[in-house]
Length: 166
Image 1 (cartoon, one colour):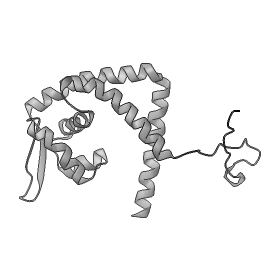
Image 2 (tube, helix red, strand yellow):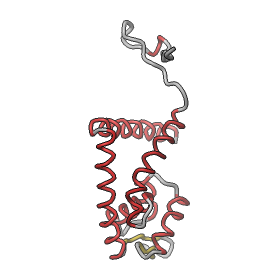
Image 3 (cartoon, one colour):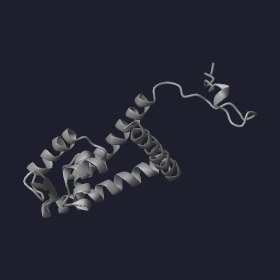
Image 4 (spheres, one colour):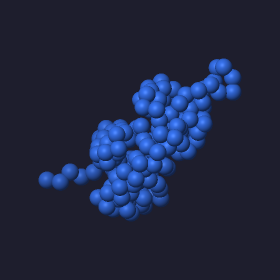
């Protein structure tokens, strides 16, 4: 027997004679994590061919596009905390793709891509493009566009909530 979706309380309906809106069932966090893991596996399979993880490619791309750049700027752009950024930078530094040097004063730092890092990013960008085209084909371009719009809208709503609570 099919499961009928739960409906939201009548107080959430506008206008009053509108169809009931289905209430969310299950845990949004769990569903997002499942989707994120599946999408990550898809991209990882493509990016791994050039010797990077998708997290490394993303970070390297931000450094190339923003650099030389303060770590705090990268963290804000990527929505990472400082410790995660520091941990994710370490392999890129070790492989010679980025450098972390002194900033404007002795207390600040600047992250910059090396020539080797720029070349690796260009190589990985081609693999990323194949991953994106493959995902578009599997899910449908319209669905991917709609997903991006929904994700952007949700992030904006959560950012506004964070600003109000600060």
